[in-house]
Image 1 (cartoon, rainbow, N blue to C red):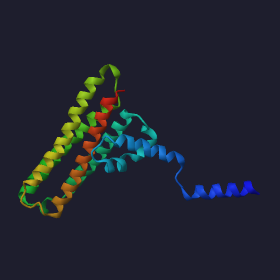
Image 2 (image 1 turned 90 degrees about the horizontal axis):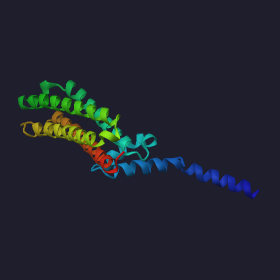
Image 3 (image 1 turned 135 degrees about the horizontal axis):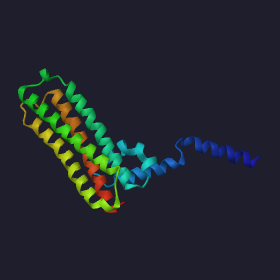
Image 4 (image 1 turned 120 degrees about the vertical axis):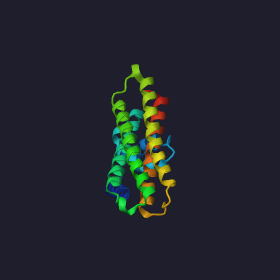
Length: 190
């Protein structure tokens, strides 16, 4: 009888915590990876789905960071393409056009980065890291330059411009996080 009660008590206690024990390992993996980033909450939120695959692999975390940045960058480009130009003043329309071009350049650099991260080689590691740092920094700079264009416009109080700025800022944070994950990979090596 005592073993039945103990077993029932154990089942009850396990039901109070519906997350499996291995979930804490996944949380530890993503927390460890994101500890190197400036925007840790955003990193934890966007990269936690990669925990079971990336585990303790800095190269997989760097790939995950760039993948998330690519997806977000594509979403913003789609948003900018459907943004009604008529709702914007002349300066904002110019800034929007420049921003589209900058975000396309950013996306190209992110894609190049992901391609290299998928084919890392010990014999080329230093050169690959140098190229990656250049491309990811450029992607970050492109987004910052996009934001600068909207700061100089006269109608920065419009809801459309505010939305663009918020989305590009978030995307810039994701790019910053992917650069931090790359720096962690450089420090740890393959």
